[in-house]
Amino acid sequence: MRRLLFHTILSLLTICLCACSGDVVKKSEKFLKQEEALPRFAMKNAKIYDIEGKECIYAIADERDAICSIDIATSRMDTIAAISQTINDFCYNSDSKIIWAAVGSHRTVWNSKTCTEIPCPCTKHYGEYITWAGVSAYHPFFSSGNILYTGIIPTEALTDFNYDYAGFRKKASLIAAWDISNPDSVRCVKIFGKRPSDQPKDMFIDDCYQTAFNVEDSIIVAGTELSQNVVVMTMSGKTLREKKLSSKFYVKPEKKDFSQNHSATEKIKYWEENMLFRGLFYDKYRKLYYRILQLPKQEDKSSFTKRKQDWVLIVADSKLNKKYEVKFDGDKYRWAILIGKQGVYVLKDKTMDLFVFD
Image (cartoon, rainbow, N blue to C red; front, side, top):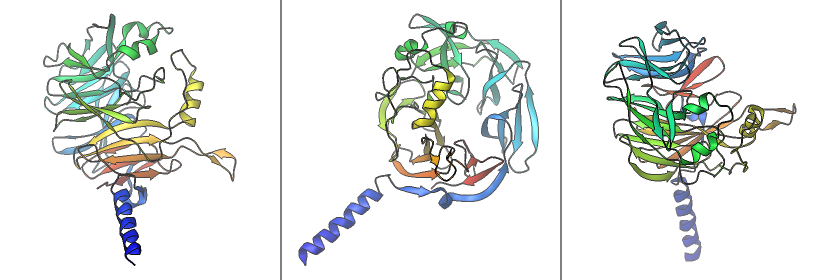
């Protein structure tokens, strides 16, 4: 009887410990607050900002020559900035109330105060002249105080398609901090940031460095699509620690040498067949970190066609301790999220559903 009681208690303790380990996977429906909360707009690099008490989605227009806003409360759309060049990315500085945008071929930045384009001064890093890389969600482009944080790219790589980009990535830092206290000029004040130690060597599929900015704690959390670990840094550039932030579904991707140039077809095939981390976010309203893991494509045996890729949202607390994971159906939801006061908007084909993770 005692032995039975002992084993029963031991089993219960084991279950409790496993449940508290963060490996719990929950269905997305559990967190669904409102279905079809917003229409989906055909725009790029969407972000939510609360400007003067009005929460709006800001995004690059489909033609990439304007920044538009969509009022979340009314769904009204307005053009807030029209720019003569192609807009690659943008951000809003809540301190200065200025919108900054990377425009053209990495060489200039535009701001909403002067409505002018400022050339980016080239800075040397490991013997290479570099400029900012403000393109897509795979590079940081974020502004706080008098600093604009961007990714970096060698200027030679902009014109030389045979440039050894992989060789540069192995040695280079990943974030540049630019002083923007004077809206008429910018200057580089620091280059910092390293890839996590578990980043596989010679496997730099793309120059993807995913970042989450926690302004309240002056923290940057960064990772890559191939690393389970994330690097925790101060916003002044000091590395504090590494921490594993991964999924119970994670399987190490197939080893492939990307040190040489590969075709877009080869890269897409690799993305579809392997597990890759796709995004890193900080939710300032709920003090949570989110990390997205995209799962490999699965074949639909009934129709012999490949389904869209399912994905997992890893939810962690303010100390980056994993709380649980939420699995999303790739045929229904895109792996793109927007964080607002009410919760997290997850994109569908034509609408966005609202989720609250707690």
